[in-house]
Length: 89
Image (cartoon, rainbow, N blue to C red; front, side, top):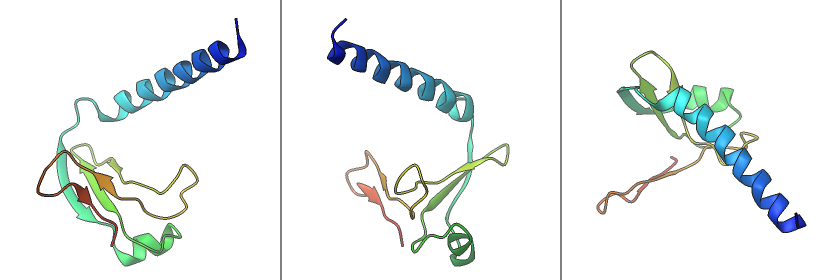
């Protein structure tokens, strides 16, 4: 197997692993609330900005971050023509 094919196979495996984890968290959930992170919550997360927080029916939640290390809040892209981005504030 060439190095490029091996890297591609590893990348796909990583995608599959994380897609499975995302499905465990998200599939079947109902969005119960949506709000911006409070200034206090943002400060507790060492964020300079506040992202949208999506809260599910079981009390779990998700919010976008700039990167995997949590180096600030992140915006959300949408498929809505009138609101293509939910920004950080």
